[in-house]
Image (tube, rainbow over all chains, first blue to last red; front, side, top):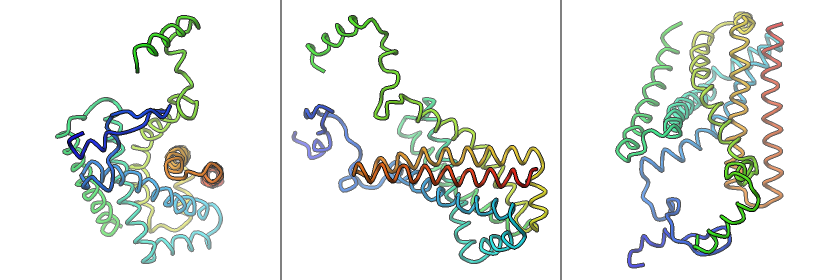
Length: 143
Length: 138
C-alpha cells in the first residue's frame, strides 16, 4: 500500500476476513462528482416524492368526499406554500423519472462507459430543468 | 476464494445433485432472490408513461371545479389509469423506502418497527387513493 487511495480498497468478507476490493465512494474522501451527486439525488427525490404522494391522495380523497373538502385541498395547493411544494414536486418527479430511465438503461446493459455515464447524467440535469420549466409555463399560460 | 474451499464447494454441489440456479434461487439478504429488484423495475417501467399522463391531466384539470374533476375521474379509461398510477406509485414507493430504511436504520428493533409502520402507512394511503377513485367511478 503505497498510495493513500489503497485505504479505499480494504473491506471485509461476510466471514470477517480482510479482502482487497474497491469500496463505495467515501463521502469524506471523494470530491462530489456528477455520478455520485445524481446517485444521491435519485434517492433524495424518491423520498421527497414519497411525501408528495400525500398530496395526490389528499386530492383524490377530497374529490371523492365533498365540494368543501375539494375547495380546501385546491386552496392549499393554490397557496404560495402549496405552489412552492408543487414546484419542488414536479422538479423531483421529472428528475426521478429521467434518472430512472437512465437506471433502466443501465439495467438493460447500456451506457456503462464513463463518457456515456457523464453525458447521460448531464442530459438528465438539462432535461429536468427543461421539463420543469415547460410544465410551469404551460400551467401559467394555457387555461 | 482459496483453491481448497472452491473444490469443497464443487464437491458439495455434486453431492446434493442440484443445479447451480436451483441453489441460488431464494437467496440474498431477504431470502427472496431478485423479486424485490425485479418488481421495482417493473413498477418503474409502468410509472414512466403513467406519471407523464398524470402530469398532463393535472395541467388540464388544475383550475376546474370539483364536479368537472369528478366527472373526468369517472370516465372509464381515466379510472383505470388513475388506479394503475396509485397502485404502481405506492408499490414502487414502499419498495424504495424499504431500501432506504434498511440502509440507514441499524438497530434491529427500530428498523423492524419503522419498516412495518412505513409499509402499513403506504398500504393505507394507496388504498385510500384507490377507494376514492372507485367512489367517483361508481
